[in-house]
Image 1 (cartoon, helix red, strand yellow):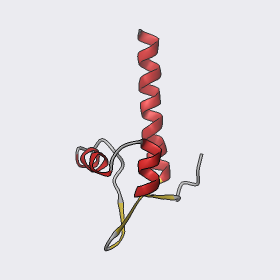
Image 2 (image 1 turned 180 degrees about the vertical axis):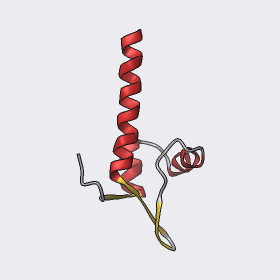
Image 3 (image 1 turned 120 degrees about the horizontal axis):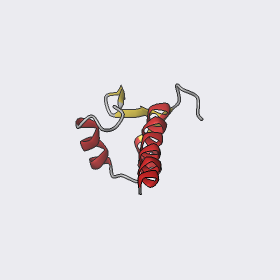
Image 4 (image 1 turned 90 degrees about the vertical axis):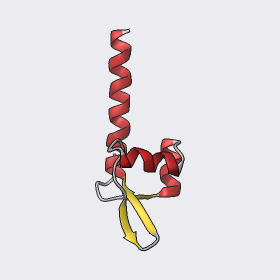
Amino acid sequence: MSHPKQLICKKELTKLVKYSPQHIARLEKAGQFPKRLQLGQNRVAWMMSEVEAWIEERLAKRDAQNLTS
């Protein structure tokens, strides 16, 4: 697990979760993805710990579905 205060940029995020920036923005707006941090006027980042927790939730859902199948 990474350090809780580590930030991830948009380019790294899209490589990690395999979603387009547009889809990430839609998920954020719907409250289904961690919110970005505005670092500057043209720079955003996400908390790595929040993104990892989001991924872990999806793994847990997948594993729970496999148990009921």
